[in-house]
Length: 84
Image (cartoon, rainbow, N blue to C red; front, side, top):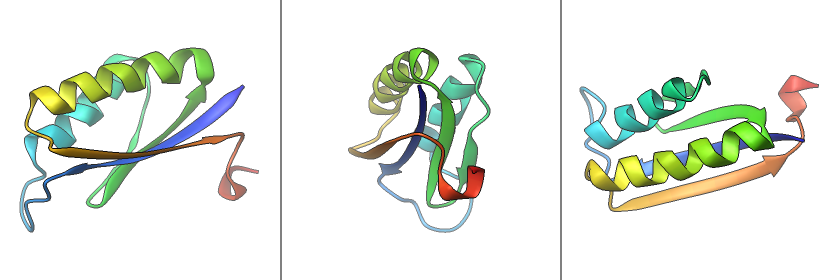
């Protein structure tokens, strides 16, 4: 089963370099063998359920350890309209 996860981490720090918790999330996904779409307002990634769910659990631990106060996460089953 393919899942797509989209999430944001807060606090936002405005213009300039992304906050440490945002880049830590990206790096954690890459360490899991995934290539996230990392942007200024959030991160998204698509993968098989068996790969993505453990990676997301690791992301949550990592971003909390690096200063995130809030994580907003949405998980969608199946490919998005852009991927069909």
